[in-house]
Length: 200
Image (cartoon, rainbow, N blue to C red):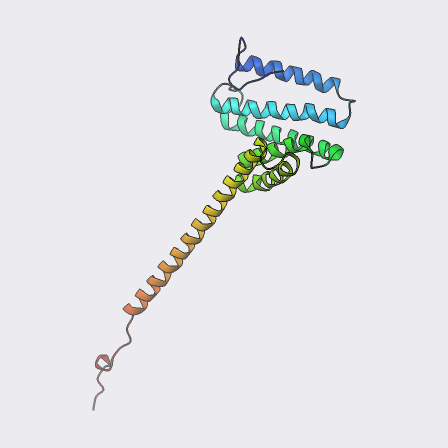
């Protein structure tokens, strides 16, 4: 099956999605009694299809009459995440974590968590992907370098945010200290001249 975000050839985006979805449903039925690693392939492909549909909705190639754009995108991303997690469990059980099939699911779980929950949520998955790709494919492999760029960019963004928060905290503390000193200087103790005179 083939599905591109903007459609392709004689198919519109919706037609391409419908064909891909129908084909995957047929594959799922045919492979119900297949080994786990084979079923994981179909589940992973279904996850990719959900992810691509969300991207197509964001780009304006697909739309829904039943829910608004933001709801549909979040729903398809959540469905994709659940499917990738299933594929990851099956592949890990069969191959272990350090395998090129398993690392595909790890990559997509990190991507979806990043999209749904922010950079921090996906960072550990991207760290795991990088370590596995370095071990299996070597440091100079294009996919390893891509994984390193992604993890490094997230780490840099995290460190910059932490430095900014610390700077804001320090600036706030200095401002409170200055305000306190100013208030203290404005409050003066009465002098002897200011004391009320006593009758003789």
